[in-house]
Image (cartoon, rainbow, N blue to C red; front, side, top):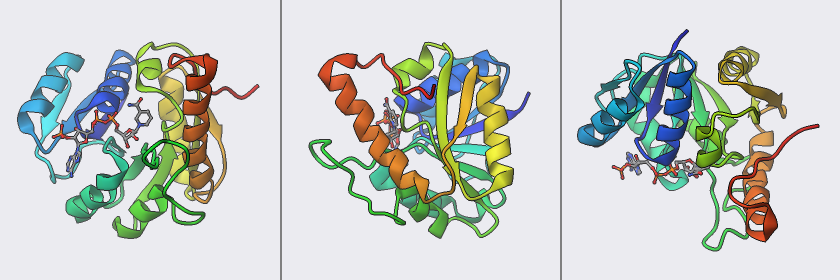
Length: 203
Ligand SMILES: NC(=O)c1ccc[n+]([C@@H]2O[C@H](COP(=O)([O-])OP(=O)(O)OC[C@H]3O[C@@H](n4cnc5c(N)ncnc54)[C@H](OP(=O)(O)O)[C@@H]3O)[C@@H](O)[C@H]2O)c1
């Protein structure tokens, strides 16, 4: 299997990291708080490691598990350490009452990350349409994603398949904005009867 690096040590880092480790990947946690990184690595187990915040991640895939308002700045802070990596933007840029997103067409968080990341870095928008608790359940799921890079799409599709998910390619990075709205749709469905253990599926 492979090494998956995760920036952040919160709920989504835990959910994705735990599932990845269960399916044979080595997980590396990079957090601004080294103690939190170590606690999460210990919780994930299966040989999970930590690295300094800002260091070059060991994995080719780097999950940016940071709230949207800070995600772009964090990628900027890592700078050249992310060169050549496939960055996965999982953020939901919801407005205050989760009635809409604060991004605009062509200016999703994924676009903003791509704009500050090193030139040879690829950005994939994914996982923002799945609740962390649902990822953690380790059941079959559809993983909706978008990217401009065929290479990054193939890498990401292989990764999610290895986690027991079905990769669902939504198209180029311009679809990241649609995926951000799909996050709103998911929350609307969850709040109006479907519940927070539900997931979007393609049939
Ligand atoms: N939770 C879900 O079900 C879910 C589902 C889909 C998508 N998402 C998206 O996933 C992302 C992470 O969500 P989460 O639920 O995992 O959030 P979380 O539990 O609050 O974790 C956020 C992480 O970001 C770190 N962080 C925040 N600001 C930072 C900064 N300026 N520099 C460095 N690290 C910073 C936090 O570090 P500290 O602990 O040190 O503050 C923490 O490790 C968000 O963009 C969210 O929209 C979440």
